[in-house]
Length: 275
Image 1 (tube, rainbow, N blue to C red):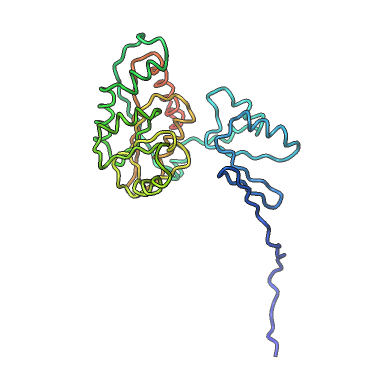
Image 2 (cartoon, rainbow, N blue to C red; image 1 turned 180 degrees about the vertical axis):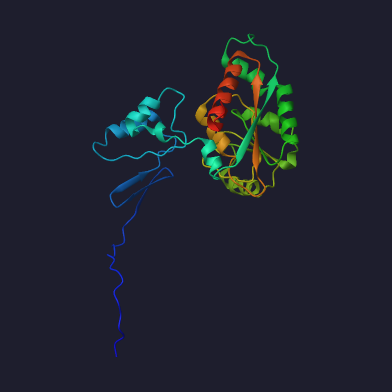
């Protein structure tokens, strides 16, 4: 006969929702249950602002790893998405919560002629890109620090100059000129720790997860707050036996680059909550 049973709860079974994947130039945007999730990666604040102004009464939620803007556009960001800065999470918080690895910052002073150059490109070419002594110092520091070491450069020629000073078999220069069919194989080798020295341009700046990296060298002279934070994020991923990451940057004795150094120092102090 029939067994006795007891009703312990009633749940409404939701029909399976259709998810639409709208792909535009390798950028995936998902639409489900009346909600559009759009990946606005690398979109300018002007574009985001224009889109927000066209959305009418729609609810907009913006997520960003670099919500504050050093270029003066924080007000425009707030106008588009609300006051993002009130929820700003510093790296120190993520480190304390155990989501990221801790880091220490070391700087090295590089001699230069302060007022010799009339233009910034001229100064960068001679004092950064083609500065033999400075590049030798970078290679020496890379060899002395825990490996693998990630070395960020702003210019292709700078990366090529540094690569000639490091062991060829253990050095990879990952940049936009690499053919797509070669990128996957070389990237797998990086993930597995095959290379001791990984030189990279901005192609490694975002969306790259390589936990095995132990040291970071800012070989260029960038002052962009977003770029500095994004590049730092490449080496802060957790990994076994990885307690702290060493971050190296340079105090170049040239009027433009001295200011860049000071601004990077302020960024590190802000993120580490150092007074």
